[in-house]
Amino acid sequence: MTAAAPGKSTYTRERLGLYVLLAMAAAGVVVMVVIAAPFFSGLTWALAFAVVADPAYEWVLRRTGRANLSAGLTVLGVAVLLVAPLVFVGWQTVDQASEGLAYLQQLADSKQLERVVGTNETAAQLYAWLSRNIDPAQEVKRVATALGNMARGWIGSATWGVVQMLVALFALFYFFRDREEGMAALRTALPLSRREADTFFEQVRAMTHATIYGTLVVAAIQGLLGGLMFWFLGVSAPALWGFVMAVLSVIPVLGAFLVWAPVALFFAMSGEWGRAAILTAWGGCVVSTIDNVLYPILVGREIRQHTLPVFIAVVGGLVVFGAAGLVLGPAAMAATLALIYIIRQRTVAGASAEEKA
Image 1 (cartoon, one colour):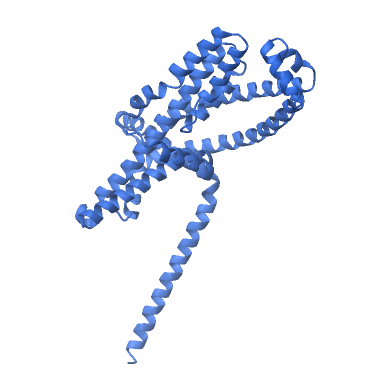
Image 2 (tube, rainbow, N blue to C red; image 1 turned 90 degrees about the vertical axis):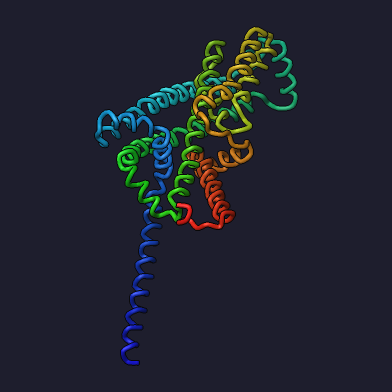
């Protein structure tokens, strides 16, 4: 009995020490998550860029044979192709939004609003009807003030967005260079067989690929086409409205027609039937249908998901994670569906993960 007691005490002390280590490790993980949380968006976009730009990295790596150089060149290419257009569009959008706000404030602070609508009979009648119910000038002033407050918030968000983009490009270099080690570590941590892990990663990769190319790139092209037509027809702030059309095109069910359709209607009400017809034809036949042509080309054999779950994944992701939710929402949906599929395969087949390896 005296010999067993020390052994039992040692066993208990070792187990207690293990629990303490686990608690310390869990606390360390929590602290690291808190530290990394401000850069969550940038890291998410870095992972998304790593998925979609992986073929480019492989192509460069085959020709250079040097991981550091290949990762650096690929990141540089991503920066040039992505950051430069974003900076230009952002600058144009802010500049034109500022001009639009100044114009609205000018309308609200003078009688110019009445003179503008007085040039068209239909608009003048509508303005007279509105004047009997509300004060149009006061409402325009209120809208201008609200938009000005929103613009100041956007400037702060844009500044932080630049920081997140720099974090994304910095992390992207290491995601390219150290991807083999990272994937090996992730496979070890997941309780999945090799075949199951391949299925899981392929589902997430396919959804990320479809989100970037099939949603964001197509939306950007729709916004570009809409903005170019606005510029051609002489609509003020074409870059701003093109940006708005691109944002609306990202969300399923909504779309660019929410911008170009009211403008075409305004042209028709103003008696400018030619511009109304051109904008309606371009918006309905090109802008709103280009995704049906581009999606199969950009995404390839990736299967379109049902509109309802994609809508929930995108909008819910935006609400929970912000801009990063555009990628995280659909990716989380794909990961969940992949895990459900793996569970069903194990349950139906009655085999363990090791037997399926």
